Image 1 (cartoon, helix red, strand yellow):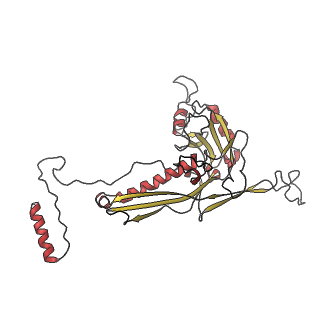
Image 2: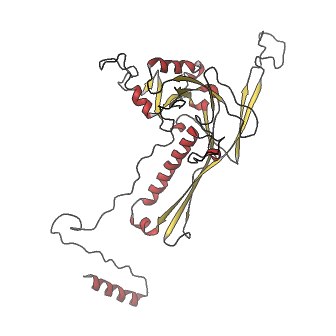
Length: 345
């Protein structure tokens, strides 16, 4: 049956039944050979999106569910026992050195949003398109939150708003202070300037790293965190590539200094797993942080206000469906003593 006959037959059926008739105008080719348009119709494979690097900070970090427009954090600090002689029955209130106290800070929740218009015809024609769009959007949000909680400065309304600026998360290497001597809690209170902790750091060239640099960073992490299952290195991939070339001598037959028992290179260092983290600052610029060693469950807390919300809106533009998505969360360094940063020189 040719195209004209199909149309006439369809008109006849709709006149007889009064119902909507779908007319298939596709041509069935004769099986005379192989190639495009010969031997059958085009088959659409399932749609897919290129794999994005999801937020690596969620590996090992403490994750909680929260509600409301802000989250309050409270840390008990100081000692309660008598620092001179605690081996007594006598009660000496608040006699520790330093005395018992609390450090408190409050952070507002932040929101990431996206609007995605899609042609209705495309949603019908392409297999697995809806699921692919949602999955990729989740990964995209994961990327955005990772970059913000790494390098954003929530104290500065900079012209670059890709990481959020004053509307973004508090960046591990963008907002918090560093010290080569000791870590400390930030000021207590409910202002946005409170809770900016100081993290202990090791200064060394991040383009010419050596074995001693890694040892110094590992030694700087207090020993109570060494045996934690969530203690791990987060290292920028460029720095990992350099560490893989570390040898005991300058010749090609030198022993690999960061090798593992299974022959891997920089998969584990001093027994702690290595997590590639492209959201840290790339090595090569003075002051950048391309490496953090931390007990992540103690060091970083991520509070998700709610699961990612996606809503389809069909009346925005004729012929299109617009997906609106939002995700709200807040992140903070919870225990500033549980992490060590490398500061490039």
